[in-house]
Length: 336
Image (cartoon, rainbow, N blue to C red; front, side):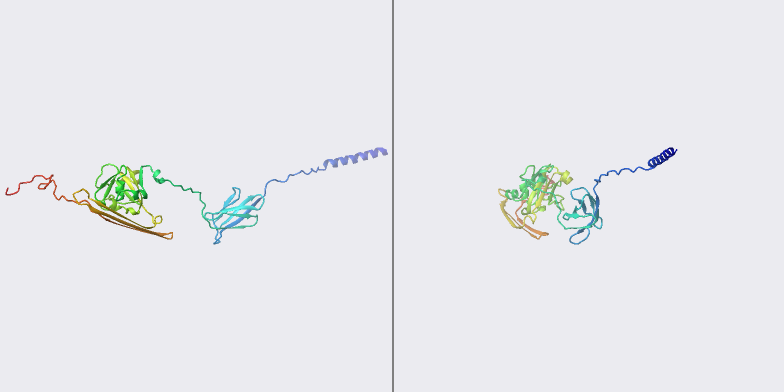
């Protein structure tokens, strides 16, 4: 009996221990968490100023060197930039008209960038020379050009007489100082369809309405080059350039300073009804430059010559009573 009681007690104790073991929560084992590989992100703040005046520079470009991460300063010159990685960070600051600056930046510390004024960085320019101006080579029409050497070596007493030796050019002389150029169509005492320009300014006689040769041109001693466009040039210079265009460029005082003078002597009316007459042309030019802003030039010319003479005083009108080859017979004189 005693043994059965001990066995029953042992069974009850075992049953209670098993119940406690079943209701006890199981504690999970701690898992191994690997350290994060995501880099830390920092905020960089600062202000951009002018090194001389200390004024803030709005619109300055700030970026991390070697990356595409950047921002622009506000109206007060301040900026805020997010950077990932390990400090210190190298910040590159640029602004138009100022030299670029590299600054070491640390998180939590506002940086102040002072930019110095500098020249604009430009691309490399290669200058090469050629025997003819590039603008003449690129022109869509045929352009004949006379430079300083051609004008000095030419056997002519003025610019327009030398132009008459070029192809497709016809010069009609109304007088020594009144040559009229024609490069297309019929010629005449005036050519309103031909344009003559001096340094880009169209030279027209106020009364005639067309260029009148030497009277609307600079003295040859001050001429640098002359460009003649033979034929239609209306597509480039307007409808009044239907017969052609003459562009004359004078010598700039900065490129051609100093004193120059020329004297030309000659004789005209040889082997004619009039005795030979002397020809004299004197020209002088002086140019000077003061500093980099002011320059001037003075040009003077004196021309003395005998033009054509009207030696036939007969009335060659076609009206009744006129004398000459074209006269018509009139009524007989009284008393005959």
